[in-house]
Image 1: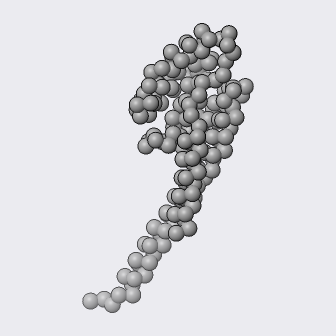
Image 2: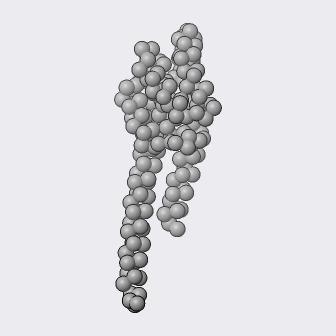
Image 3: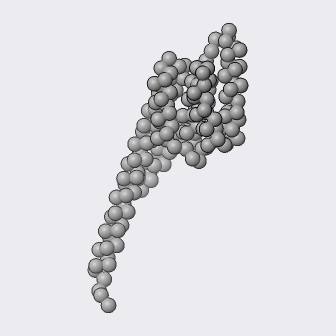
Length: 160
């Protein structure tokens, strides 16, 4: 019961945090509208795929854009790549991969306007990954104890 409670609470907090954060483009000055337009155009395809729920396809597109020569495009793509891995509606979500991608984002773009959001994600995802590891260990221990219990019952049964 306690394990279920912790899992449910962790999932709840992660879902609430995911629901409150939305994909964002880095802030830019008003004089930079042309650049912002180019960034939005470059990111249009993966954003559309994301909105359609085609997360694995969006991930492929965002990953390609992380190597874009335009720093604004690459920065936004890196953030969105990480976000897509963690997105609560993504049934193939991977918290460890999201954590890796957010950490890479912080390393590559320490001056980004999204650095606080990314740092927050890193903190939350660290906790989620740690809880996943703890849950796996508990599942393994439970399975081992069940196996031991079954062996014990078989030994206690009279031979026929």
